[in-house]
Image (cartoon, rainbow, N blue to C red; front, side, top):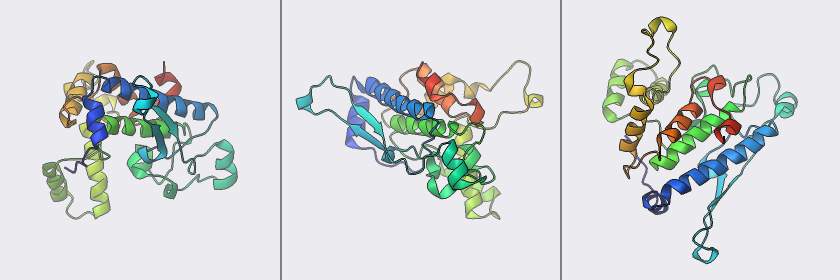
Length: 244
């Protein structure tokens, strides 16, 4: 499993008494910025840490000043008019997107760039990935361990490297209980999901992956994350609703 080295600032922030507050502040400002875009019918389509501007107050500005976050780089953004006039019926291309932050309908679909039914849900998935990055301190939030990779390689030894990479990614998502809903015929009784996919189980799994062993601040944060990372675009929470 590849884990990129965490920055000194991330480690100090996560370990500080105000770490959870800083995390909430960053996510709230991020949601507010995205909600404002969506109210204007604009989908950013390239939300990632490199496109976020964060100002951390200096000691001279005061210890109680909050961090400030702004969205940047709208070069891949679209609205209804630009989709019609600039891209045609097929919409914008995958070349304008960063696949590490792209949702399942892009990664595992038939070349679609975003859901035509609810394009803004693309941004919501990206927010969920960023949320995971803030907690885990790595840009590789969806990855499998070496043993799982070896098993996949053995079973798919006749497949191309690209197909195997998709299999690694899908398996990594499944380990966080992100997968297409099971058909009703496969559900037993009133059970909606196995115990390993409960909010508490996900919270514990993410805590063990956090180098600081902190994880998410509370179970409500885990619930929000899971509503952002829904497999189907129409099931994801809106930015406006997430702020409530």
